[in-house]
Length: 363
Image 1: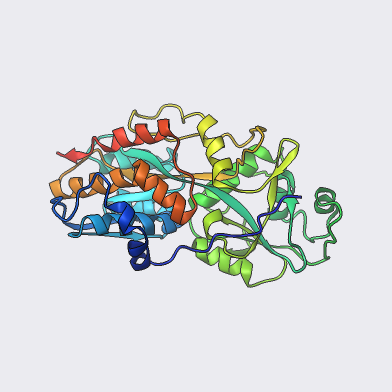
Image 2: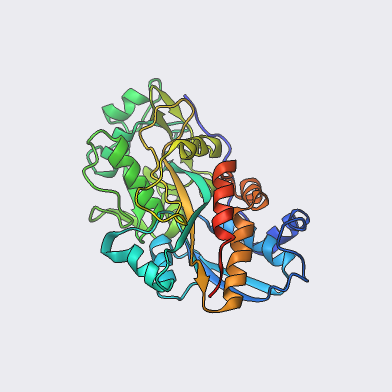
């Protein structure tokens, strides 16, 4: 049985990160205090990006001393809403802009009639986390996970769980599934995985708002992790970089069980197709959740940065271009990998994202 015995801790605050990576940031392409950039850049959205955003903000602000970057981890859905309403100059989202309820069209209106930019910036596995006394390792298929979260499997010693964990003494403890209470890109990716990979055992479409009524819920990644950690028999889903000391299940891929890792998630993203019908500046990816490739981990989130191609205010344009250029640069991607446990974009995706961001300008 495979298990992850050492979990990455939640990344420390921005001030500490600035000290930790200021030496690395000195060599980026955004210049130093003489870069000419100044002012405040406001963004927010994905709570899964929170740790990586701390890394990126600290490095960028250290290199550009006249700049303050604010990032509010309010959840992907609220982030997209606040970008469309112009409350944010850019947004982070664990799912691409949708065509539902005119979201993509409204983002285009916000950007003066131009297609919005969407580039992947943060790739990370989503961990199935649990807190069950006496259970140190756990293996689960998509079908079993779906039945747990659909309240069809209700105790930890259920035969379906036992069959996947031979030799493990499972307690009769009641299972308490915990889901996100907010509109969450992590939920979108989790439910997309279940709808594609669970073989009909998940009867709901992918959605950012949890599709079932009732059950225990918590706001944001940190809230869900805390809720799972505070009870016995709990199970949930969260960005792997932020799960702390919770137990983490290995999921079935083909005939093997695979633990979450940045490398295993990146492998899936590299072989996944693009969403059809998107503009050239929109890199929305349709993640292949049903791959059986050895060592792949298809329960992942590809988190995006959303911005406009042109801004009315020249300083806004310069700040968005400067910050996003750092984030998608090879240096920015490696900084997040080192400090926040994400997977760097592969070279082809990184180069494409950098080329799109480089087009940001004032009207």
